[in-house]
View 1 (cartoon, rainbow, N blue to C red):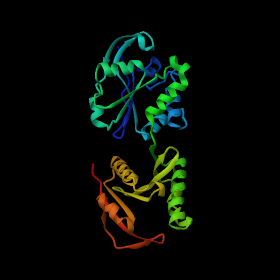
View 2 (view 1 turned 90 degrees about the vertical axis):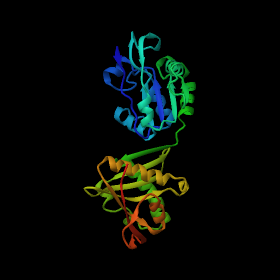
View 3 (view 1 turned 90 degrees about the horizontal axis):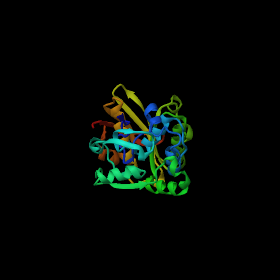
Length: 301
């Protein structure tokens, strides 16, 4: 029998899209939905309202940013072709480890076969399961209906990206200009400093295509990471987005081998950082015309 693909997810995956089994093209390429007759990637990116980068690794990166995972109901199978009615022998995947590792909130069944098996085997009894028209070519005559179903099923607003890509830096700059230059009257040549010219890394949280929170970060020493230029759009404050962003940054820092985070906090934000276990380790000082203190945190899982 053929063996299916391993699941794609991480500890932040909240939506799991479940198909029946990979096509022969997907098995050869070891990529989800590699059969060009299947419209999965086109439907998905249209439903999300974002550009399809075409490159498989970039597609997965976007899925991760939106908290989307992929797997199939069948772990192994014998099938005479690539159609769902051609299965002759199958075994069901064990989803228990995935559900224990990831905070899954919603299951999207890609097509009738996946939906039937989920129901028959009671795979996700405690979760919301949404059945969508299959993205296979057989449903291309129902494209408008299919896209509408997938848009409603996904209905995701926020996506988080991190890295040093030029477009991420541009998004971070856009938000920082609004917050630090326009709101706080920091001169642009102070805000955009020599560190930005050294290609540091950025976390940027988007609502659809609009950046709403960002952190710049770079190594301070071999075991200490230094986040700075941390801000949230004025329209999105008091919604817990800053806390979520900082916590995701800390998780990534731990994965990258850092044990401490060191930052300059505006004195008005000391209480915010103290709630997140940061400790003040300096007297107040002026930075870019704003009174700040240095705070430090030991990073733990």
